[in-house]
Amino acid sequence: MLKRRRRAVVLLRKLLTCAICSIALLALLSVHLHFFPSSKVPGFSDSHKLPAQREFKHQRLSTENSWTREIVPLHLSKAPVASRKLGSANLVLGLDKLWKPPSNRDFLPCVEPSSNYTSPGESRGYLLVHTNGGLNQMRAGICDMVAVARIINATLVIPELDKQSFWQDTSNFSDVFDEDHFISALSMDVKVVKKLPKELASSLKIVRHFRSWSGMDYYEEEIATLWEEFQVIRAAKSDSRLANNNLPSDIQRLRCRACYQALRFAPKIEALGKLLVDRMRSHGPYIALHLRYEKDMLAFSGCTHDLSPAEADELRMIRENTSYWKVKEIDPLEQRSKGFCPLTPKEVGIFLSALGYPSKTPIYIAAGEIYGGDSHMSNLQARYPLLMSKEKLASAEELEPFVNHASQMAALDYIVSVESDVFVPSYSGNMARAVEGHRRFLGHRKTISPDRKGLVRLFDKLDQGTMKEGKNLANRIFEMHRRRQGSARKRKGPISGTKGMDRFRSEEAFYVNPLPDCLCQREIPTGNMTIFR
Image 1 (spheres, rainbow, N blue to C red):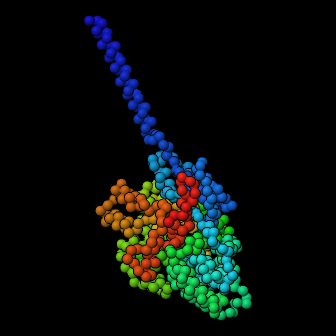
Image 2 (cartoon, rainbow, N blue to C red):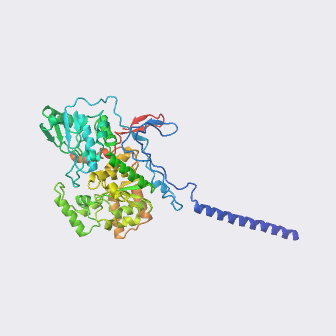
Image 3 (cartoon, helix red, strand yellow):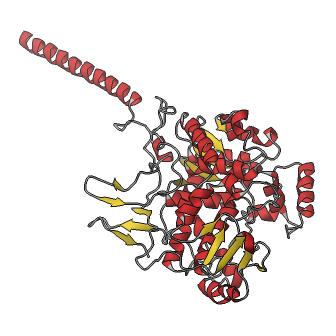
């Protein structure tokens, strides 16, 4: 009997010991899981490295494959560094995905001419070009005119920049771009001179408005025949004068060489642009937000959401008094419902929060003066205190040479935007399209294009109180933009059913997406390059 009692006590002790050990083990595991929710340490993935100047002949993709890439113009600073500024113990798991670039599907810049391409033939005359629009509209036009000069065997005179646009900028070509580099970089493509020869200054010239979105036939059969009577042809406008598609491969690649290699910003602009990029990167990975909430954009588009009646009247008067803006009567509600309005600063804040970007995210505001100033920026500022701009990052002395020159100030924004870890345009204007195309050319860096039409419906529900910010809204916005982040894809053609000029207008612009013309895909098995068709 006594032996049985002793055995029971021993067994009870063993059970108690096991229970205590189990409880202790569970406690240790729970502490471990609390502090280390995953075996993967939260952090930021490295972004694409931009090639440095004089760099970039044989870069290694992996330990087994390497290839040659062409030099591209915008190599202003070191690669974006994986963030340590935002990295902290309270980072949520998966934050690194917010900065991770989309897949480039092994597409790389490929703009070398074909074996049949020759140096420029004997010039038949001089092509004068008067560009029109803002910085990025002029950039695209200049690159198209380089191609046109090649097609019609012309010597291109350095283009004149638009001084009559809304911004009234007096800058000359050499104030904005590196003139000597432009001439030398295109020496094997087109002869470029700084001025028309004196003996031709008073000669008979013909001024032509080149037909929009024209192909080879138009320039070879209509424009080139003008050499029979004139030595100088002047293009009155430069924007959208060349078709997006169905041009010879060598002409398409020439457009890319002109845009991404030859048309480099002036040294003083590149120097300050690099400085701004470095100062932004000191805060960690950053978003460049092209906040097109400026007086000219709102007046032109007729968008008045969240504006006071006095502000709406001011914009209407600007539109009515700007002679070359053809549309005067605009229904602002209809514009917004169709997605034709730029997002407001408040809407941008809701959008970025829904995508998961934390409040400590550094954001560079790539824009001119925001309409209404603090009154319209307060909500975005409250969500994201680290709002930067060239005016905040640079001293008054550093900016002094560029103020009152809209094109030069826009060039600084362009540089910081192209080099950003994430680019978000609030409106799909010329700047947004140019930056998106350049980022695609450099390796498909992350560019989030808001679906404004879809977002308006959600924002209206928030205003009406039928939806609140939270998980449901975030999931809907995330799903809406899953495939709108700048991944590699072929350029979109015209919208089905459109005809005439509407057909060309509906095409995705060449400089928005230079694939397939100027990007080649690496074949995984052999490491060779192949043109994507």
